[in-house]
Structures are given as structure tokens and as C-alpha cells.
Image (cartoon, rainbow, N blue to C red; front, side, top):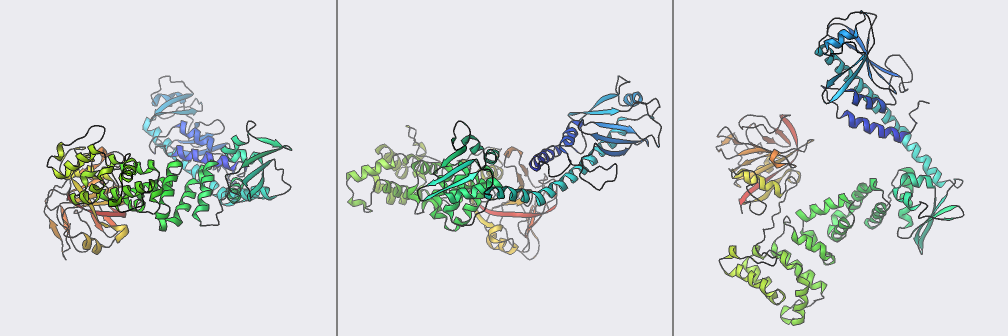
Length: 637
């Protein structure tokens, strides 16, 4: 029976395969190998060769007429279940043709074949012809190839359109019905349940009835848990006990198993977290990202209360990718949320070590030292804040607590006053040989010569974060090379000589040109970075001069400016474009950053064409919309 209700999940899978293969099909070259796959996947097609009131029946043939340049007309056919392309001469208007003459015109040496193979692109094109005794006018390869490829493309496009129509019909009309049918089976007392699931313990305990075939089909976890090797039976029913999940959480998951619906009637982060952890344990990976977003939403306004919890979650649950990305973003751009949280003292030693090792957190070294001291005091219960009242045992306790972390503190990036006021008082708790090295750094002039073996270097790189939603430290290193006209990779993370201070962010400050000038005028050299709406391209420009806002156009005279496009995956593929002209930047009160016609921002719009710089940084779209842009003041470190 030909019906769209047949195996809807299988149909969706075949549709995904179809789209995957279609995305690889060239508009210039087409091949039967890919067309065969499409034909096999396309079970519901419209038969164009005759009229029908059932547009989604399964036809035996799908046809497309083509006309060659010599006037001959042919019919292109795909057949199922043995798909191939057949070219059949239209005998109504033209004399039949001789396959040997056609094969000769296509450089086939055999001359008398009913089937021949012609190479197009990387695949083989398999064509089958009818035999005939009549002659056919000579055809060249181009005469034959172009209309055939055009016809194949048209045929596939038509099929795809019809399959999309069928898919929409399934999604909108049948899946909700299917979901309700399965959910009704869950609540129907007459249903033949063969599994009893015992959830929770004590006062928070409940039993659920279920069908083993549904659990097997929908859950990898239950497929193993209810296998003969593990399951227990009682009165011909499988018994499964899960004490570490609450009945309320499992009821939500059981409805999801049967109906594909996740119903959450609470905004309590703890309850959502219980659901998230249970979903991870029961291997429902397809809903984890959704649940993580639901969990994070209500806690963003009180993040300090939950930050340690979500850091621990990101480490203990490798599948929590959304939370992991959120934690990484917070560590880079808002580390104070972690270090000044009242929950900071509950951080595990392993997590604190990983934070202190990082180079990209935006926090002063003396602040890290203060936080580390407080954490260590808390762990060894040193509650007396008056150091002059400490005895030797107190200092020894602190020394033992500090010992795993001291090598990660970059004392050389503290000021002398900070060292004197906040490090010197704890001298008894710092290893003597380390303290001697630290003291020499602050009280001698030979700091560059000081090194320590024992896997400890007091001269560690400065922590160098950047307050940006668009670029990271690696891009800062690349741009620093460009600013100084140095080769790619001339600078490293620890040696690039500039700091990038955020002046303006459009998504934060607005896209008004007046706001840009208010925040960025007369600030010296600046870098502008743009993310293009829709494509996520990163482009921008460097201006070594001040921006200002005159009433009329005023050009800035410099050959040191440049524009660029950054390839975040491979910096060597990034584009650096330098000016042909001396007046390579421009200023006007009602425009944003302006690198002449090569890159001009006005509000949320941008204009980019090849004019005064030596390389084009965008291949398509002269005018486009900006998703966000940032302007940084560039300062020598």
C-alpha cells in the first residue's frame, strides 16, 4: 500500500540521506551514482508523465524531456527499483537513431555497444540506449552533455520539492497523532505492560508500568538494563529498580520515551538539574542541549550562587557541552564571578589548579593571590585574620595548603607595593628558595637573568585576556604581527607587544555612529573587528591615527593602516590588505569606522568593495548587515 503513513521515522532518515547527497551534487557535473541513491531514497514521488489525483503515489518511472542542439528530442527516465538513466528517442517527430553512430560521436571506440560509460567529474555516468537501424545526425560531446545535465538537475529539484512537501505533511499532521497514541497506551490500564519500574526510595517512591518493546526501541540504557543478563523477573514481568532518580523526574522522562514530549512545569534550577542529570544517566543525549539551556536561563542573574556547581557539572559530565561553553566564557571574560563568589571556597583543588594555570583570564595577579590565600586558609581552618597573632603551626598549615599552587602564581607581574603589603607578611609559609627568587625580582635589576630549576620558573607569561566576543588571544597575536609588519607567527602568546582595550561594542553600546565617535574619537591607534550577519565572517581594519568627527569628509593620511579577513580555523589563510593610496582612512560625524570604500561602517550596515587597498577581503556582497562590531584601543604593553 502506498501511503505517507508508512514508516514515518524511516522516511525522515531517508530524507536526511537525500539532502546530504544533494548537497554534494555539482550544478555543472551530475552522475548516476548519486542519482541512483536519490532514486532509492525517493519513495514518494509525483508522476509527471500522466495526470493523477494522488500526487504522492509511488510511480515506476520519473521522466524528463530534453532537446539536443541538433533538434532531436529525447526522454530522460529514472526507474525503480533498478535505477539508471535511459535516453529514449522520441519517434513521433524524428527518425530513430543508430547507437553506434552516437557512441562514435562521443569517442567510444567499441562502436557497437548498447551501453557505454562516459566520465563526468569523479564519477561514472551510466547511460542505456534503445537499438535502432536508422541514422542519427552527428552529435558532439557538448551537444549531448549540457542538456542531459540540465535535465537531470531539473528532475532532482522536482523530486526534492515533492519530498519536502511530504515531509511537512508528516511533521504537521501525523507525528503529534502518533505521539498521542503512544501516550494513551501508557495510561491505558488494559494495555499489556510487561515491565515494572521501581523509582526512588523511602517516602519518595513510586512504581511505573511500561512496555519492554517501547523501552528497547527508545533507550539504549534500557536496552542493556532489561537484557536477560541483568533483568529480574517476577510473575512474568521484568522488574527494574532505580533508587537515585525521583518519581517526578522519571515521570517526565517516561512521557518523553512514549510521546517524544518534554513537559517541564517548574523553573526551579535544582529540579531541572535533577532532570538533566537523569537524562544523561539514561542516555537521552538528544534532549541534553535543550535541558542545559533551560537550566542556565533562570540562574544567569544569580550566577555567583551557582558558578561552582556548574563548573563541577562541566567537568563531571562530558556531554554537557552547553554548560561547558558557558563556563569557559565566564572564566575568560568574568573570572571575578568565580573568585569573588561566596561558593569559591567549595571549589575542588583540581579545579582551582586548572584556573590558576590559565593564561587567558582577565584578572590581576594580586587578586588571584588574595583569593588563593583565602581558599587555603578556609581549607585548613585558619579563621584568625590577624597574621601577627599566628604561631608557627598556623604558618606551617598555610604552607602545606599553598604548596600545590605557589608555582602558578606569577609574582613578577605584581607591583612592588603589592608584593610588600600582601606577599611579604606570609614569608614563613612560602618555601625559602622560592621566596629568595621572588625577593630578587622586586629588589634587584637582574630579573631577566633569574630562573629556577626544579620545574619552577618565576618569570611566567603575563595573564593576557581580551574583553571581546569576536576575537581571542590567538587573533591578537596575528594582528600584532600585521601591525608591526612582521611575518606570520613572528610573535607568540607571551611575546606579542600590544594590549587590546575595548572601547566600543555595538551589541552593548548600540549601532549609532554618534556613540562610536563619543567612545572612540581621539584615542590613538584602534582596531575595528566586524562579524558579518548570516555568514559569521570576521573582517575589520586597523587605523594608526585618531578617529574624529568633522562635519565634512576629512581623509587621514597614512600607509600604515590595513584591512583584513580572519580565518579562525587557519590563520595562514587569513587575508591582509594594505593601502595603495595615502588617504586610506576617512572621518565624518555621521559615519562609523571608515577605510574608504574598501570597508565603511554606518550604523548596522557595511559597505565593502575593492578600491584603495591591494586585496579584496570579501568575494560576495558589496553591501551587507553587521551582526556585531567592536573597536579596541591598541596600546604598547
